[in-house]
Structure formats: C-alpha cells, structure tokens
Image (tube, rainbow, N blue to C red; front, side, top):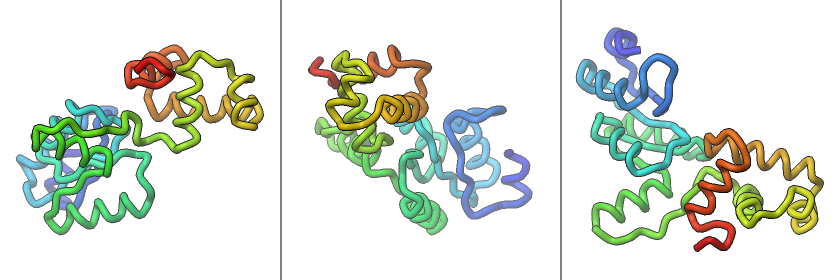
Length: 175
C-alpha cells in the first residue's frame, strides 16, 4: 500500500483501522511520512477515543465511521483533499470535549440506526427475541436480522458480547 501511495500519489487515501496486512494507523504513519501530499481519511467501525487519537497522531486528516451516509463520506473525502480536517459527528463531539476539557455527551454507538439502538437497548435489558419483536411490532426474524447487523457494526461475536458492551455504555437500565 505504501509504495502505491508514493508512486501513484493520490489526493486522498481511505484507510480502515483494521486492515489485512498492516493496521490503518501504521499505514497512515508510513504514508504521511513517505508521501506527505497524500491526505489520509480513516473510514472505520472503531469509534473509541484511543483509535481516533492514534489515527490523528499518525497523520490522518479525517475520521468517519462506517455508519456514515454516502454524502457524509463524499464530503469527508473532499474536505481532506482540500486540506481540511474532518470528523464524523459523534467523533467530533468527543474530540471537542477532550480538547475543551468538558465531558462531552457522547453517543456510544453512533454507527447504529435508531431501530438498531432500540433493539440493542432491549437486548441489554435481557429481553428475548420474541419479546423484543412483540414490543416493537416486528417479526422475530427481523429482530434477528437487526441483531446480526448490530453484532457486525459493534464487531462482536455474539449476543453476550453485544450486551456487555451495551451495558457498559449504560444501555438496558444499567446506568
């Protein structure tokens, strides 16, 4: 990847934190060192502060979560190509909160849709798929589909891991 960035010198290179051969933070560090004219944009599912700060320290000019709309992603690419720094909304709130020393009200899972957030809240409350479906007026299969999307977006293996992350974030009445 690094050699292509140096030889092809694109305006923008879009990376993920987790990539097959080299993690995105290391790749960003190498690219910004060897091809400083190439703007790096992180497009990732990782929304933790450590990942954001590591990417920025490595030279990334933008950080957008994969749950962003196509328009937001295009806007981010254009912004970093123009030399601007850009963050997705949830990331921006946290970054500004850290810079100002104020505790920012954060959305712990900005990549989830409102419906997925509802399902996660009910999963964290310990409700079964059937009960969740009844509460939301949806079929159990639809709830299972939402749960699968949640697991993928949170990058967890199963319901238990999702519930643990959700409860740690204050979902399910565990505030």
